[in-house]
Image (cartoon, rainbow, N blue to C red; front, side):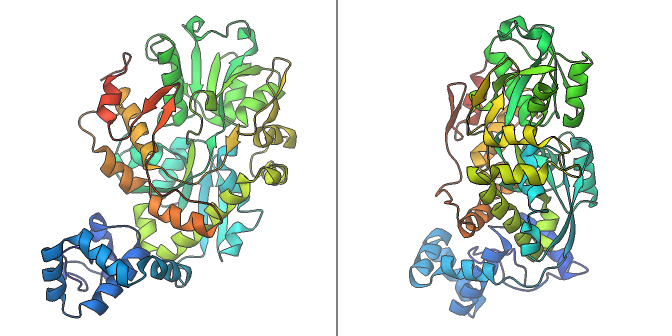
Length: 453
């Protein structure tokens, strides 16, 4: 029986393999398009429906008569589906794979993924995880897509791009079940530009961002365009791996960057740059990096996936508490992780920091950790991919968002980790004072004067 057959679909049959595949595992992969929620949820729903309707024909007649929504509501009123799913999830079977490789880039955005190793969050779930420091985002993507990494730290736009085959050799169904961090980035300028704080004076600047498919690229472009600069004609924007950004600023290869920390704080520490503005001043609460895995990993190793995601979310909940930040800074500053002075990492995580212009500032929300993969985040990212010509033609925003940003899994595990999950999977927000309504993406896109579409 496929765990991904929807028991509330009147046209589905709750039967084992269809006879067209060499193995049940191959059948499961072929059935991915009919996934409704997680494998755990479907297993519980199928068990309940089988108990209520031993004859499958009767189940299908019932569903055609009342509809799936009414059927689900009626059954939930007499059977505690939610509680059953929770209990089933907590009593998951043995891990399909214990030894895992998870790739990461050495930046504070990866804090939960990194700290889960030295602080024992992976081991608590029975996992033996090797966190592998990786040089750049293209390499992270390629190693994850080839299967060398079981899961990876990715920029939040990357799972969307991979799933749509944008910027990659082929489209591969990908998932983002947890956001790693919110905020935590900044625009840093070379010290030689300390008297050029007005973005209108930045024509001809050479900027660096970590990757084309990054929040850094979209936030920088948004910021420049709002100040009247066309990011494709008035400045140059190039991709530079975060570990190489400070050296490029020192060598005068670039004038500035919008980068993840601790890159910004390291530029201040080395005396080669100053922090012009934190990214939270552009969009307070924006996502940046994420925990990601292929759809194949999620579906073929559900117990391992659940254990890994639970470790990440529990680490995220621990990192969210400001009282733990100094302890975490010490754990992740080591050479095999961030390879940074502890004071640099502390300034980022605690939010008390030198700006490079002689001031010590305090902003407790300079970086924060919230695992909720809001599907409205995905919709906004897709509008910017289309705005700047990375995606052409029609985009089914809601479909892509729901298939990639796995909010259902995050909500359940957030609750287990002591966090309070939201009741919805989408929300409105504002970027530089401009509201975004995820239900009107095309109208939002058309409202920009500077765009490629």
